[in-house]
Length: 377
Image 1 (tube, one colour):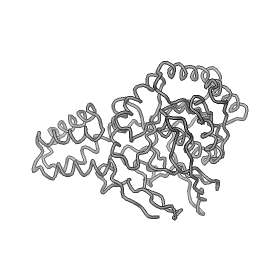
Image 2 (image 1 turned 180 degrees about the vertical axis):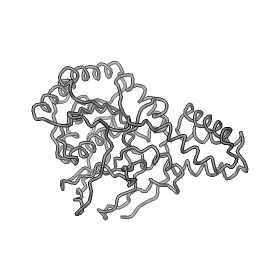
Image 3 (image 1 turned 135 degrees about the vertical axis):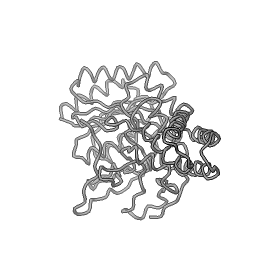
Image 4 (image 1 turned 45 degrees about the vertical axis):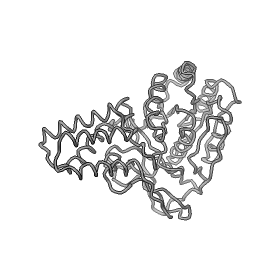
């Protein structure tokens, strides 16, 4: 497969920090001020940038760092400490499991649902999707297309129906069929915060009442390309629901990847997954160390984007995703032999359904071990 290099967040930040260090013969206040400015303008956020530099200054004093070259590794360590939320990074492994997906329209929520469904199906789990976004035109239609391609069932009502009724019916179906994982789509408009909060509260009450024994995850999907707007979205949705984790989408070539650091730091939320491409396999379990080290890993690591589709065996590198044995983990890969959705397109604000490309699923080679996931009990 041919690859095209696209200047990513990691490449740009590495380049700017490297230039600043190269021009300084020693660590001084001027270098610290310049590094702080670089971080702030990389969408890391002022408060988080100041926290990083404050910790860096403290480390310079305590560890008696003198060479500017020592700064790079220390920044990576500080970033890792900010985004590493320990066991909270892992998905629950209790079943039955209900995953409530929240986020604004156009952020990659629908395709993330499909990718997660494919992952759980690949693990041998039974999955049902609940099309509870009944406000956006064609939302249920689009989700039904994905469900068909992934090969999972979907519960849907007509446009304009009560979203909580969809959740209720989906729970009854999941219980009756002994389903392992129920993934619920939700409406994603923020123009009426009160309605959003009321609807999510109603859904959660129904889940509590009808399926109290089910494990729960509430994942907020944020688009990395929106930069600091993602902070506002995290604040709004965080006040409307008990978010247990973040999914950062479209992190394959954006210069605004620093928002992942800000979200993890300012809201103390674990980033559970990152979306790094258009194909259904381009969803990765978040690895704090790999993410932090990628800032200084070399020219545009993680920013190699497929520009051709001829080689089925080639897979773009994934930043921030490694199995426990250190091997990069490409997640969402469908081993079933069915066709999987490819394009990471999503709903548009005008309600139009977006066409979705297909990609033949790959069969595992003989003796090939399935990709592992990161879960918690």
